[in-house]
Image (cartoon, rainbow, N blue to C red):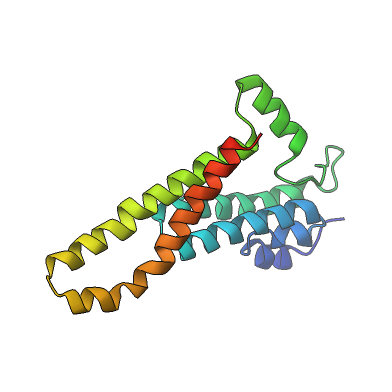
Length: 165
């Protein structure tokens, strides 16, 4: 049974909510989790590259809500499943000879850590050193502790995932 068009429109503006309103809980939750994860990573790490998937996911979620609504009464009703079905990922991994998920996550974390050091931390440190104010540099050193810690933990965790047997 088709849901109310007005409420469908209202819920479609929140990624995942439109799918959940239509009864597709798994799909809606997975879209919501992906969107929230990219927002959290972007806000925490301040790396613009993590903002790129946000509009794509938002637009996909918006139009998918209406696609679900239009196919609900038809015979080719879509199955409610998570976006990251593990059997599909396993087939994709085998067909392209992709390394394990742990290694891919490890490589990604290493790149995130190196990117943070090179693009966010190092330029600011070099700028501060150019000022030749040792007192100000020591006072501002505290602002570098969090990004350096996150970057180093990302690198170490990534290396452990790659080297773990």
